[in-house]
Image 1 (cartoon, rainbow, N blue to C red):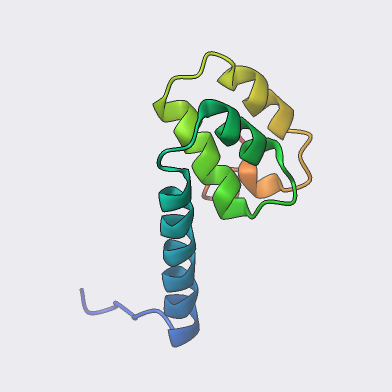
Image 2 (image 1 turned 135 degrees about the horizontal axis):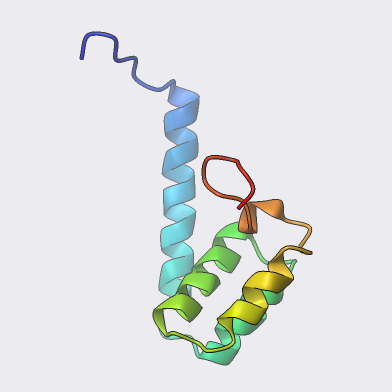
Length: 90
């Protein structure tokens, strides 16, 4: 692929930091209860990484109330929690 341009050092550092933060939150929530995951997912003072990992815990554990939480996220001030990775609204 001759047109490949590696990411800038700033982008690489950003990706590295985000991955490290997500892994930290994954470890934090590994043995959490569903109640703890619910609290973190709903807590707007938690980091985005913590809230996303909490949502993943609830998805993996097939919590039957997940649909209610997902609908509530549309009113959340952090739109990253309900936007697709490409930046388009779901």
